[in-house]
Image (tube, rainbow, N blue to C red):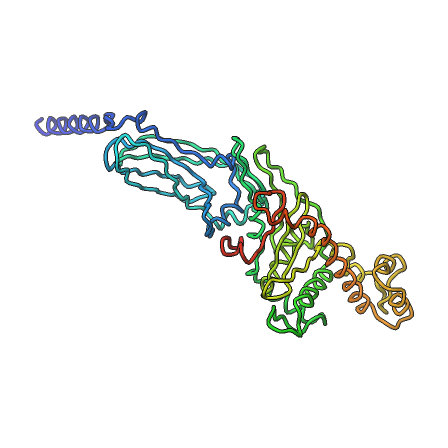
Length: 409
């Protein structure tokens, strides 16, 4: 009987302890007075651009873009603020901690999120995620905010962004983040270029007997042989009225799919030029972009190149339709004949020259056209390029911008 009474008392004590332990605890700080707020940058309109996040991971400029803002009023002197960003498919669990020195003072802070960079690099479709942000003061939970963010493909490049209040952010410098001179495929490509008979080595600006123009011509001939055609894809499905964006293919996508618009092709050529030590520049005009490169180390002489002209002739198609003697059908020959002199046409038709020689002659002719194609537009607009306040025209010097932004890789 005593044993049963002891057990009963023990159970009652345990229940009483548990009920006391589960009773609601009184809060030390008033959430209304702390007034914790969490917001995503208004320029981004609730959208995460992987290209922008990745380029800012190594950004060294003065105007760093803050993705998140938190604000809080300190309830005490030296209050310890801790903010936790829950893990999502965009980011890892992130803990931000800061001491707030003065009570009743409003603090605006810019925490840095731990992004999942490897995943961002692989995004090819848009999606939506919910980010939970929790605020603690001196280890006491104060408030929770939920942010709904949409995310875009790595190929979507912001050109301009607006905060909805009349301010515009020019982001076309981001083009240079798509230039990737570190891509491992380039070494193999350069090896193939050396077998084309255009150059025997790539020396950048080191030797006078191997001028930069000839090295660029080797890249040009390779692009023609690769069959890189012009594709005008640039639009995106972005619903934001604050953003002006463009679809840009990464270097390996241009290589694999053999398609490029004006920006894609500039990025592709500039990547290889950077690899061999040349200094490329991308000129951005309304609705168009073309490439430039310095022909001397001192950057005194600038050559231009309209990269989309590689799509005027498809060399792999010529190889495919040629007969066993290397002769083209009449219709196929007509496509290239306009880039040959009458004598060059006659020499080929009479068998004095072969198809490979014709391809070199056509490539040379197209290279000359591509080098002169944008000269008039450049001369007319060069003052606009030099005006930093004119956002319709941008001169993107890859070497200068590389000090601020590294390639997306």
